[in-house]
Length: 433
Image (tube, rainbow, N blue to C red; front, side, top):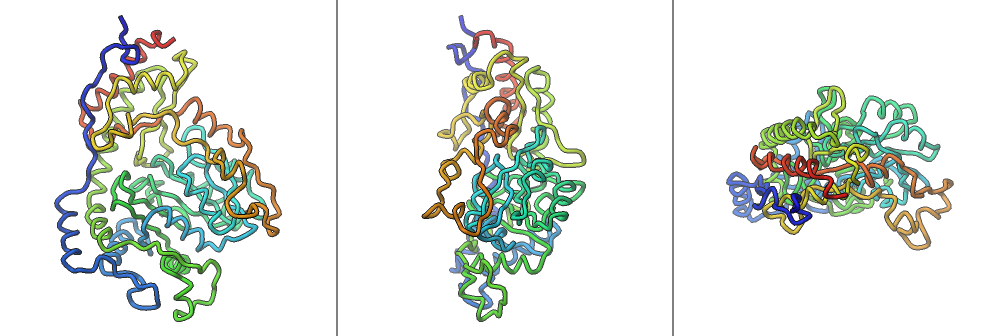
C-alpha cells in the first residue's frame, strides 16, 4: 500500500489553506470617503496645481516618504510603471546598456527596451539570489549607463559592493524593491539604498492597493523627472520651463485617489504584517532544516529579510531524487489557498525561467527592423545564449524551491501541515524512485 498521496496514499491536508486578505473596515471607510467626494482621480495632464495629483495621492506620498525616511515618494499605477519612470529619469537611450537581473519579474529587464537601450544580464548570487557584484563588474562596458538591482524574495541587494562599483564607473543604480517593503540593510530600508527605488502595491504583495507602486529618491532632479514621465511630460515641459527634454515623452502612470486612500491604511498595517510573516518563516526554517535535503535560504549579514516568498535550496545528492519529482509529491500532500484555488499549491520548483530565455531576447525582436539591437548607435554585441548565467540556470532547473505558505494568515497548525508534507515525502522518498 502506498504512503505518499502522489502514489495514491492519504493526503496530509484535505482543507484549503487560509486566504491572505489585508483589506478591512479601515480601507472600506477610506474608499467611501473618496467616493462621497465624487473625485476618484484628481490628476490633470497639463501644468496646473493638479498636475501632481489630488489630496489623497499627495498625502499618501508624504506618508510613504516619512515612513521610509526619503525626501521624495512618487505614486504610480504599478511598480512596472515605476521602473519605466525611474529608468527614463536616468537619461538612458539608444546605444546604452543597462545591467539587469535574469531571475525576477520580466519588467525589470524589459524596462531598458522602452527607451531603446539594451538589457545586459548579470548572474545571481549562489546563496542570496540577488545580482552578484562580481558578475556585474564583468558585464560593464563603456556603453553601460545604469544597473537595475532587485531585492529578490525580500532580501536587500549587496549595497556596499554594488554601489561602489556603480560609483567607480559613474553609473546610476535603480532598486526594484517590489518584494522587499520593510526589509533592511545595515539599518536602512530596502528601496532607499540606491539612486531610485521602486515598491509594488500589486494585490499579492505584502500590502497592496489592488494595483499600484511607489518610486522613492533623495535626488530632487530625478524625482521631478519621474513625476513628469508619470503624467504626460511632453504636454507640460513648455509651460513648466523644463530645460532638459531627454525622455520627456510622458505616459499615464497615475494612481487614483481610491488607490491612494487604500494605500494609506495599508501602510499602517505593514509593520504587524511583516512581523507575523517573519515569525512564520522563523518557525518553518527551524522545522524544515531538520530534513537533510533541504537548506532554507540564508540571510545576508546585518540584513532583515521581508520574505515575499520563502526560498529553500534542495540537495538532490542527499535525497537521491530530482527536485521536481520531490516537490510534485509535496504538492500532492497539500491543498490550494482559499481565494487562489486556481493557482494550485503555492509551492514551486525554481521561481521564473531565466529571462533571457524569453523569445524577445532569443529572437532579438522588440521593435520593427530588430531595434534596439540593430540600432546604428549600438556598438555592442548582444549575448543571450543559454548558459549565460550558470548560477541562475542551476537554481531554476535543479536547486531552488519557493513557496508562499508563510503569509500572516497561516496559523501554527497550518505551518505544521507544510512541514509534515515535506517530512512525509522525505521519509517515503523511495516510493518515488
